[in-house]
Image 1 (tube, rainbow, N blue to C red):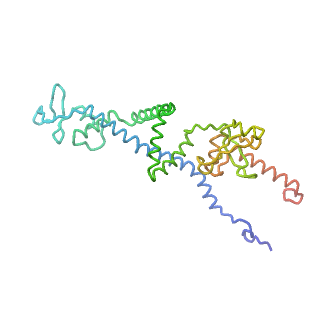
Image 2: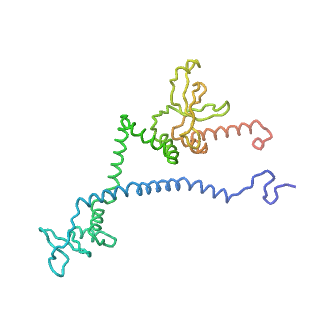
Amino acid sequence: MSDNVQGRPTRGQPVSRPFRRAVLRGLAVLCPPLLTVLILVWAINTTKSYFLEPVTGWARQAIVWGIKDTREGLRLDSPAGRTATVDGRQYHQLDNGTFIPEEVFQVVERKSEEPLPTSGDGFYRRYVDLRYLRPYYTIPFFLSVFILFLYFLGKFMAAGIGGFFTDLFERFVARVPGVRAVYSSIKQVTDFLFGRQDVRFTHIVAVEFPRKGIWSMGFVTSEHFATIADAAGEPVFTVLIPYSPIPHSGCTITVRRADCIELDITFDQACQFIFSCGVVVPPEQAGLLQKAERTDVKQDAEDDPHSSAGVR
């Protein structure tokens, strides 16, 4: 009697779970765009909370100090009115008795969707927001200023002048318990991502490391170690072997060029492979592997006359 009764799996055969597979497949499709959106939203909100809002607040206060014109004790033009004229300029009286220019009051009253402020400072802060600090003005402006700041900071550091101050700051941080470990870890990650250490990866290779039969991906950083090349009697590569899942840590080895396999992949693809611990394989390499597997299966079927593929 057959073991497979009423569609039950035979012993050793994996249990089919179509619902579970469908849910996991849906998660696999949904997670990348969802996580991308969440990371972007987090980055935007963080930038807004810790950079844009403080800078906007400082700019608002500076503009208010520069243009504020509040007065006290002015004589009203009429007993029933709330305006006073000084040197041909009309002022509006607020509920607390302070006078502000009529045009400032009109802009805030006409354009503000929130309850009106009760003080002259409050009116001027709202006026500056509506007149000078609109988001479609401030965001491009502050972004341009920030990029220019990064540019001049990079030029300053490249000139070597800023190295003294950077070393002084890092020596200070190294003396602070707790902060030292956090700063060191973040600095290593940013140095790897943004290339502050000026490492140039010429190409990407696979080498047998840490022993024969185990292949590791590495970045070739140099081809000019003359002493080792003379001892080996042939050209050598200096290779940085990054560790998963944080590639800023790793080791540097020097191997013979003949012992390296050059990989036809980009730097971004290599980083994805390392970050994902080998899960994300470059599409070209995955395609070659699937093609080789199909060729092997076809060859086995042709060689085995008793296989189901060889029986008509």
